[in-house]
Image (cartoon, rainbow, N blue to C red):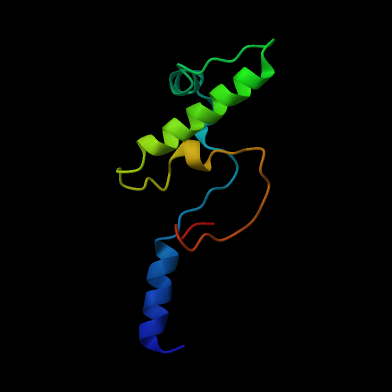
Length: 94
């Protein structure tokens, strides 16, 4: 590896972010309550609840369209039920 490529590789490695375990916000009841405020789920109306959840998630994603990317957003990267190891070249993260 030539010196220029080595420097660029080191720079990229230094800029890499990691998403290991779960974000601290997952244990913060106040943040979870604030995030899910407005989401209506009913135990006796499964289909309506699924549609509400889908709409809620879609509205959240649309609200982020014109905002700068937050690589540490706990909502986007806070999926504790997913166990996987991968590299995201778009976000330069593991």
